[in-house]
Amino acid sequence: MSEKTQFYFLLTGTNSGLGLSLAHRLLDNFLTTHPENHHLTLIITTRSHGKGSATLALLNNHLRTRNVPNPRYTLAHHSVDLTNLVSVHSLAQTLRSTYPHLDAIILNAGMGSFLGINWLNCFISLAKNWIQALTVPTFKIQDVGWTTVQGAPLSGEAIPTVFAANVFGHYFLVHEAIDLLAGGNGRIIWTSSLEAHPWTLSIDDLQGVRASHSYESSKRLTDVLALTSGLECTSPFTASFFCRKQVDYTVETEKKQNQQVPKMYVCHPGICGTSIIPLNFILFNCMLLAFYIARWFGSPWHTISTYSGANAASWLALASDDELEGMQAQEIKWGSACTRSGKQMVKVTHVEGEENRPEFEELGRECWKQMEELRMSWKEKLERATK
Image 1 (cartoon, rainbow, N blue to C red):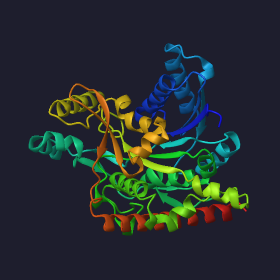
Image 2: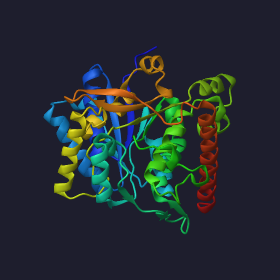
Image 3: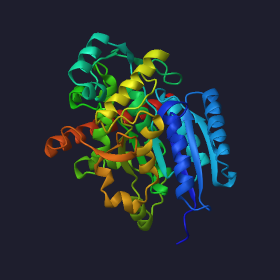
């Protein structure tokens, strides 16, 4: 068998913060760990062409400073709005017509309906337990009920904004591009959070329309979907999600297709300094100082820099199949972490509720069931509207 030399990664949400640092890290790590005859095509997405052009300029400048020869990499950009399913569908079509396969889709883009900080709650929480207050904060103020009205041809339809940006837009995209992943035996890498608390997700409100913590709800759903994606109990629903679109009706090909189901992984960046919550310059730097204090007190999760926060996702994308299979990586939530001195590592993260396997698996089954029903419903609406 000839050596594989061409690699294709798709990374969403790359114009700033964690996404931009993850793009840097993927390039850095690939170029330093792969032989010189290996080539990486890194496909980035942003919400607009302008942001994409600016991001490509930053990445090219980063690579020029390292004197990396051009034949070793290609950078490409496509625009997508993950809260707009027409835009998501269009991106999937573009990907299928442009690239031979995808080795990994790293689902990084996301948002929250954050309005600010409850400062009284913040100071009380810090006084009681500094590390806990800065690891699983309870003082962020979030709005409730954000929805995004779809454009033509789905005009008039609406979808919960945070749910779409963090989960469903990615979910819809992955299914629409599944041929590319299955053909390359690819990886689907979800970005979660340390704040994916069980109590934030209601099975009766999976989209978080009424959720007081819609961001955390979406991240809990992310955990559940990823960690139950390979289980027998969810297979009636994952089978349709992973079903390939291009079918060659031969027994041998069907056997191959059954063997080439992409694997889902989930990770989080720890606690790093991003602009997901609006803070002015002074408050942002006060936040970073507070994070350093938490790290010095012994917190392994305060990665602080977004480059450090990108460690887990980069590792999941670039590690060998044998390494990931040996560590049963698909069954674990991985987190970017560091020591007091800032030495970076990837760390296993406890997922609340996973110890009660029957209950967790039933939750996974119900989440997958509802997500597939929702995907099929939106797909039908889209097909009907475009006839």
